[in-house]
Amino acid sequence: VFLLYRVAPRSTKILIVAGWIAATVLVRPAVLVAYDNDLHKASWLQESARARLILWAYTARQMSKAPVLGVGAQTTRAESESGRRADVLPGHAFPQWTGAHGHNIYVQTWYELGVVGAALLLAMGLSILSWLWLVPRPGQDFAASAFVCASVMCAASFGLWQAWFIAACMLGVVMVTLAVQGA
Image 1: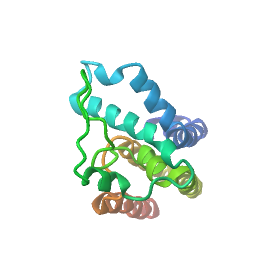
Image 2 (image 1 turned 90 degrees about the horizontal axis):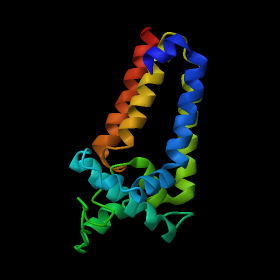
Image 3 (image 1 turned 120 degrees about the vertical axis):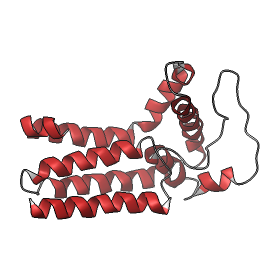
């Protein structure tokens, strides 16, 4: 992203905005297409990646329970602590459940907070990007790279409500702000 931004900043801005919108809006169909095409059974994928695909697909299918407001913040954790036994289907690396945390903030937001939460997440990202475009260059290049890095990390790592995870993302904002001011 950094190098692409150096060469073609306008095109890179468009790609970043499109990527943010796609990650937020298209995550459910993307996860279900991957699962329905048996990507979770691909032997070339690491087991934890296959497990995440199963977890995400199961969670995506549960989104219809409460599509507008979601099932509630931290429901993913509460369900995992309920003691309910989840089935492991043949050829699957992971049980059919939402897991202790979503391993994807986009999926988890849609499930726990519904379309309202997803709209807020989308708006938050777009507002961060609109601020980012006001930063003078070359700081903009670094800030855009940091935004994409954090967004990608949020797509496959930990749960949305983990305090240390939120703090790490916010620390990134502070560090980028300080770096850009010093640039």
